[in-house]
Length: 307
Image (cartoon, rainbow, N blue to C red; front, top):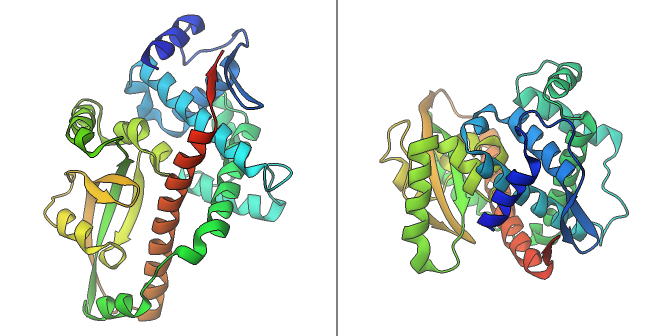
């Protein structure tokens, strides 16, 4: 695929951050879906708008990230349309998702977000389509796999009660990846580690991670120690802020975790509230794993044809 990305860069023949008059060519075909050079341009603009640090990557790397994202989204769309008629959310649910999105990027309202996207040559409708696709995909995964989620509420409660008056909180980022054979893990980790050293953890997450957090630079946010399994807690307790773990085996692949910050909430714990928060995190964590496994499976069933 490397030669293909170099070829794409040549046919664009223009700065990826100033793509104006670009001939629309079909680059890939996946069943009845196509990916065009305009699609690629739009995705690059979107990636740059939502993560400015991506500009520090080489052009061919940005093209590779955008291409892989588009392929995954087209395959998700093909699968979703087996169950629903169109990729569309009801207005109320969509408004909630859009609000979460603009608050995450520190905008005060939808109009500020629209203005920012326009400045970066991203259509608001493009963002809406991506958010809708992601929400419907998550809904499909929930419907398929929620019955397989295993949560031990009593164990969670006992763990929380053992903390007494404080809970340690970690601000984390992640890179979730997979390798074809376990023997290739060392080689893959070396590649990721070199990329982290050169371009930083955030850009490496965008490039290598298969997690839903990838487009946000792998940012997970604040997580209580109660939400993390013992293997991960053991590893991240060895770290200082700014450091990351070696690969840790998880269902469906491996994870590298970076500790951004650490703090202790030294206040009386609302047990019921904390239990609900931990259950939600662990549920989402397991559903994300099922999502990655399911996507990997259907990607094998959908041939990507280079035009």
